[in-house]
Length: 459
Ligand code: PMP
Image (cartoon, rainbow, N blue to C red; front, side, top):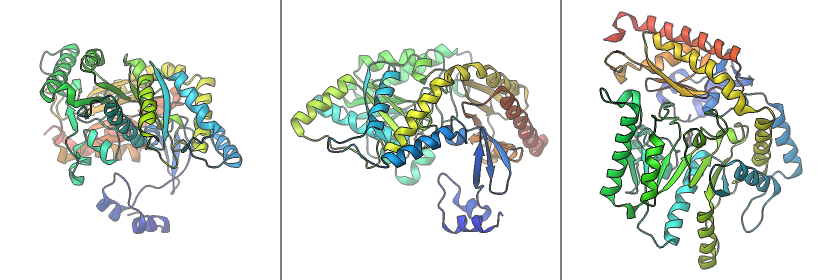
C-alpha cells in the first residue's frame, strides 16, 4: 500500500482509466512526477526506462523543450480559436497543408480532433454520410478485426475487437459492426501453414463475410498496419496485398488507423508505406504532437471531400465538429514536432537503431518463458508461452504477462502486458546504448518472473 498524502488523495478521488479499480483502491497507483529523455521518475524518486513511450506516443521522450516553447509562444499569440462557421486560424491550416504533403496516396483534406478515438469516430460519421450522399444508404456496416483497437467511444469501441472493453458496456452497439479474425500468424497458424497461406486464409474469410452480408451493406474496413493494443502484432506476409483488391472489388473503403504507426514507428513515415497500403481515409494522433498536446487528424481522399462539398450544396452546413478540434496550441506543437522529425531525420534514426532493438529483443527467444518475438522498426511484441514446442499458452488465470510486467517494473523498466504478450514501443529517440539497458532490465524482469513461477511454470 502506497500511503503518502498524494496517494491517499488519488485513491479517494480518482477513477483511473483502464485500471483494476479494486486493486487501485487497495494498493494505490504509481504516480509519475517528471521525465527526461526516455526516462520517467515516479513521485517516490524511482527512475524507469519508459519502453512504451507512455501509451505508444511520447516519441520525442519527456523533456523536449522546443515543444514546450512552441506551446507557450502560441498561448501568447492566440490561445484558442475554433474552425466552425467558416472561421479558422493559421496553425491548423499550416498543419493540414503539411499532413497532406506527407500523406500516402491521394489524401487531400484534413479534419482535426483531440484523440485517436475521435479521429476514428469522425471517420465513421464521414463514411456513413458519404454513402448517404452517394445514394447508398444501406451500405453502412464496418469491418474491424478481433484484437483490433480503434478507440473508446461508443462507435470505436464497437468497431474494436476487444471483448473486455465491450461486454460491460453493452457493446458492440447496433448491428453495423462486423469482425474478422486476428491475423496473428504465430498464435493461429495451422501445422505446415506458411505465412502466405495464412494470409490467404484471412483474406478468404474477409471475402466470405462480404458475400454473406452483401457488399451493398458494407461501407468500410478499418485496420491498424501493426495491431497495437491487440499485442504489437505485425501482419503476416502478403496480408494487406491480398485484402486490398477484395475491398476495391466490393467498393469498400480502407481506413488505415495510423494512430500508433504514424510518424516513423515502423521505420517509414507511415505504416501504410511499410505494408503497401493505399488508404481512402487515414487517421493519426499520438506521435503527431509527440503527445505533448492532445491532437488527432482524419485525412480523407479527394472524392470523399468532393462529396462533402456537394452535400453542403444540398443540405447546408456540414453538421459535425468539436470545440477543441484543431486547437491552435496543439497544432503549433504538432508543426514543431514534424519540424523536429525532419531536422533530426527521425525515420532514419528509427531505421538505424531498429536492428539493435529487434535483435536485442529477438535474443529472448532462447528464454524459457518466451515463445516468439516479432516486430518492425521500434515496435515489438514478446509472446510468453507455457510450452514453446506445442505453442501452448499459459492459462489466463495465471496472469503470467502481468507478473513479467511487474518484475520489469521492479527492474526499472516500464513495459505493457497485453495478455501474455509484452509490448515494447520506446520513444523514437532511443539510442543503442539505451536499447541495451532496456534489454538488460528486461532480462532481469523475465528471470525474476521465471524464478517466481518455479518448476511448475510449464504445468
Ligand atoms: N487507434 C489506435 C490504433 C490506438 O492505439 C488508439 C489508442 N491506443 C486509439 C485509436 C485511440 O486513441 P485515443 O486513446 O487517443 O482516443
